[in-house]
Amino acid sequence: MIQSYFKLLRVPQWIKNLFVFVPLLFSKNLFDHNYFTITFFGFIIFCLTSSTVYIINDIIDAEADKAHPVKKNRPIPSGKISRRNAFITASFLFLIILFAVINFEPRFYFSVAAYFLLNLLYSLKLKHIVLLDIFSIAAGFMIRVIAGAYIINVEISSWLLLTTMFISLFLAIMKRQSELKLINNVELNSTRKVLSHYSFEFTNQIATVAASGVIICYALYTVSSRTVTIFGTENLIYTTPFVVFGIFRYMYIVHVNQLGENTTEIMITDFPMIYNFILYILATILIVYKII
Image (cartoon, rainbow, N blue to C red; front, side, top):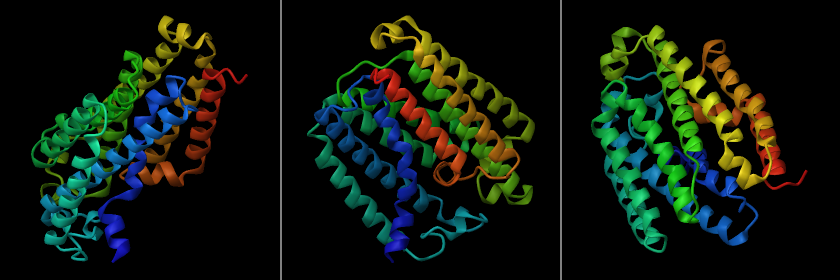
């Protein structure tokens, strides 16, 4: 039963909420105990909020998920957890979030509210509209980064926000492409209707644009006058190869290894991706905090 609720909450998906830490890292406050603590609590709030949204989404999609080759094993469509108990769990989490956010910066809890409403709209309508579905996912990641800046009251670079937008668009469209490969055309209308509006050629083109956007925006961020002035160095440009490798590795996993529907699973199970991420974080810390 505990394992079923663990799956219901989508705990592995909490890794996506690490985007809340982006402003902390690049504001040079990562090792400040107070800033780190408040950002960590912000991260927990986003984890609870995302779990609430996942539960609501699973309740709404329960019937459609039964026809999906992978999603049919989720707790609600498989019958391991009833819709009633799932709703009670979501309501309990929502109350915790309400009591928790009032202790933070007003702009932060408005960001949490915006994130919740956006994902509610996504579950009800936006995920069925071509292009708006992936842009809604991208907006969710951008809100996380903005909220991370609000909670510690720092500014966030526009280039960094654009990088976040493009990387989330890239991950979203690659997921759509993986879903197209996973299910047959006959099953499109009974699983995710919006997939009927996508094709392999179209998703390949969008993925290429999004991947290019990630690399270009991040590279421009590292050499922008604002970045160089704040960090007092141009060496952040040397972290760009890690970003490029991460994009190329992800494309390799999706196209060659025929994976990609579960972004989180790739991030926490593919060793080259894990090593690359760790090296990127270490390199960024060494450069930004002038340890070298």
